[in-house]
Amino acid sequence: MVRKLSVPIAVLAIFAAVIGTAGLTYAGKPTVASACRQCHPAQDKVIRGNFVSATEKFKTLQVAVGSLVWVVKYGDDLKIAGADSLAAVPKDKEVAVTYTGEEKTPYAVSLSVKPPAQIPDEKQVKTDEMQKLVEMGPEKGNYILFDARPAPRFNEGHVPFAVSFPQPAFDKLKDRLLPKEKDKLLIFYCGGVT
Amino acid sequence: MPEWKKAGNLIVSETAALKDFIGKDIAHVLVDLRKTETAEKGYIQGAVSIPAAALAAAKDRFPADKTAPIILYSEKEDEAAYRTVTGWGYKNTSVLSGGLAAWKKDSGKLVSGKLTTAISYVPKPRPGEIAIEEFKALAEKGDPKKIILDVRDRDEAMNGMIIGAVNIPAGELHDRMKELPKDKEIITHCVTGIRAESAYDDLKEAGYKVKFLNAIIQIDKEGKYEITKK
Image (cartoon, rainbow over all chains, first blue to last red; front, side, top):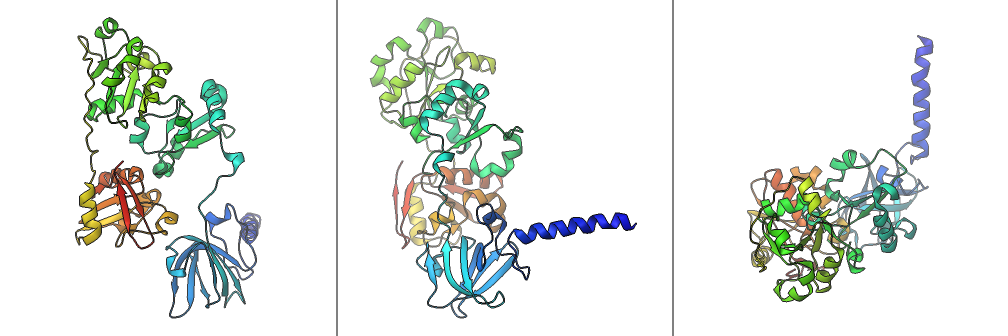
């Protein structure tokens, strides 16, 4: 029995250690929402999550990190980047709040709204490279090209060998359409402005 | 995709898509590029006969509307014909993927007999499209029985929304559909009508009363907007 019990305890300890490095302050409150963690590591006195609301009367703003909501005091000295005012920040929008003071009584120094995502150059396939890949075909070129536009647009014509994978249905289709081989180059395109 | 097209690269359409066009009676132009006598032995329903050799001289027979979906087919994919037609400014030109061989393999039907040589193209509104005037009236006055649903991303919506509209990004609609009432008519919009139409499809499938704005719309911070026809 004793031997059997030790395993789950060890697992728990590892689990706690992993969580600890993945965005918990010492008191155990998560500071970085899981979606933000893909790009942002945990930082001291920075909360990253989804904006809930700001209450002008009490001068507090709320940011959700997963299921936990941080309530942060702010004042007229609050610096806002990416929006004109707190009222202009949409609900659920990804934000980062830098605060001073104790974790129990945080005071916001700045709030920045997540800018639209930018794809770095090295992750983009240029048109001439795409032409070469299309000439080779997906088999020889070891790639899959996905058309992220809605199906009716795909039907009106698409890049040769493209597979229809409408972005709004990503979660629904991903298991069926994404290949098992992880070494295949996956290329997505859309219709520009939609 | 706009870059791909601009560089003059080939655009293809699948046999399944052409079947969908024919089956749903979606307005399109289908051109059989083979020699007339070959085409008469078996062609795809609705095709217009313009042999590849005579294509360049047939420019005037093409529709005035440069956005008309035009599908070209021959025994194989004919890239030269594609370049000719796109060169005239037809933005939605494509070549049947794999040519007629793929169509036959995919058990596509063929009809035989004389083919027409005249293109007739009458654009039809897409199913679920709201008239622009009707949308404007709703945006101005509002209607307790209707909701304008902005399906753009939050980044876009935060730079200005139509007054009274609700924002649910198209990608989140699937999970957040329950927030919308079923007893009201929902009118979706985005920037160009593309995401609005996909939201329309999703809501329609889920049993909502829904329409979408198939036009280009720009909205400023005050909620003032400008709609242009595509």
